Image 1 (spheres, one colour):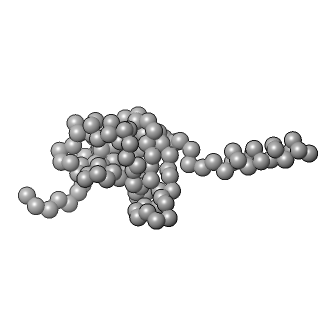
Image 2 (cartoon, helix red, strand yellow; image 1 turned 90 degrees about the horizontal axis):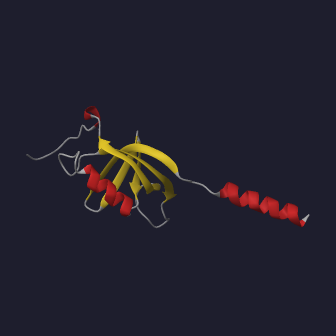
Image 3 (cartoon, helix red, strand yellow; image 1 turned 90 degrees about the vertical axis):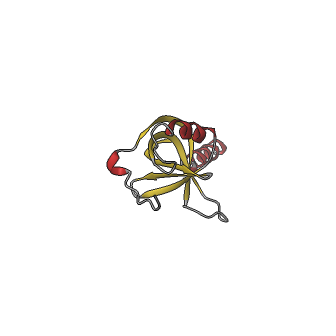
Amino acid sequence: MKKLAILFMFIAFISCKTNEEQTYTGGFVYYQDAAVFQMGNVIHGVILNNKVDQIITQAKAFQQAPTDMVEIEVIGELVPKGDQEEGWPYKLKINKVISVKALAQNKNDVIKLGK
């Protein structure tokens, strides 16, 4: 009986683990110490770490302006924001960068003010 109880606790523990690492593909932009990731109509904040620094460095080759989005494919996990935090409900924690490339021309339509 004790072994059965331990087995159920183990299964419950494993099944409760959420937001495991997955592959995510979408638009990425970094500007003034904030990064945003967009998949279709869904937007997430990005947790800043050394993988984000790697993306920022690679993205410069494809950007004409610092606010231009690039397409990225990464392995990461969605982390719920804290109760006292502002922003989107989930943040993307990037654990591995697979690719960084220019966003398709028809997807980088942005209204720019000024010059």
